[in-house]
Length: 407
Ligand SMILES: [Zn+2]
Image (cartoon, protein in one colour):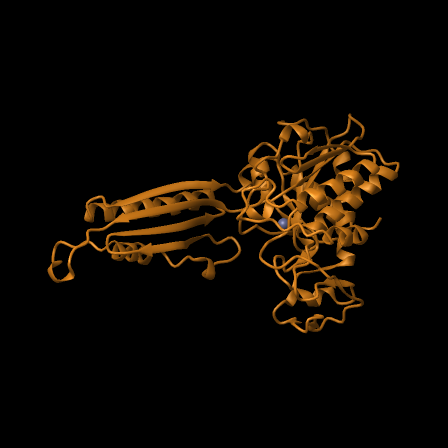
């Protein structure tokens, strides 16, 4: 079966996750997709383990035990940011590189999406304009499955190929119940990025600053030297921070993001997200807020309570100690004459979680674009090329020295 055929089958199951749900997984359809994949994996001859309760599917295509292992991970769910029921893929053959009018008459313009032009001559799959497409991350799943089919049939020596399909990535719970003991490869890749050739092994260091301010309220008419307006202190904090905000930053630039602000005279609350790729800069951003609050606390008699919590760290801190896992991907792409595009992830990633749990795990592009919206699209040719990259990565990995888990 081709990656395209698989992709079309997987997107016909609506696996949107639900951030409001208390269930695990957050929606039952993810389990339906996992069951289908479990059956397909078994038909390809893989050993599978399905943690049905938490909806994690693990499988291994057994290889030569003297050869190094490799692993791939994709997520079952799709984003709740756009509708995802009744996805109707729309094919554009030999795309001419101009604006696209979708079946529902909305327009995808090359001005808004300059990457479109690079796909001139390819077969594009878009949506009908009403839903997302689900290339994030069903393209990743289809590419991994097709790579597995290749090795299940071809007589090529390889080590164990481990795969895992995880639920609820889009709602930040992708690795919550991941069982590392069921995944025996010492290295892995999430196949969950965008552009063909993309490799990411850097993500933000992330922290949250919660600031509670207690004011002193009284009648305005007799407030002189008595009233302490918590909202004005909140305003002073916001104003004192540098203008490094998400809307002003890109690439490797970090930021302070004011996520929440609420206040009255008697109390106020602020919540900031702190993000930076560089560990030192990350620490100094946190220190900046601490110093600011301690100065204001001197002035306002300790009325401000700051709680700083680290959320996740840049996986680069670990991966750069041994770049083999990145080299395997770049060599595979180079040998297929696909230019590796190394870009940082301006957010978190399941791979960072895995990396800090001892499983170095960069992210590889699926070929999909405009994730989480109705203008999502993917080129059939790119899906085939990514499948080729995964195949080449397994071969590349086969030719290096054996690593055991934790080495
Ligand atoms: Zn994704």
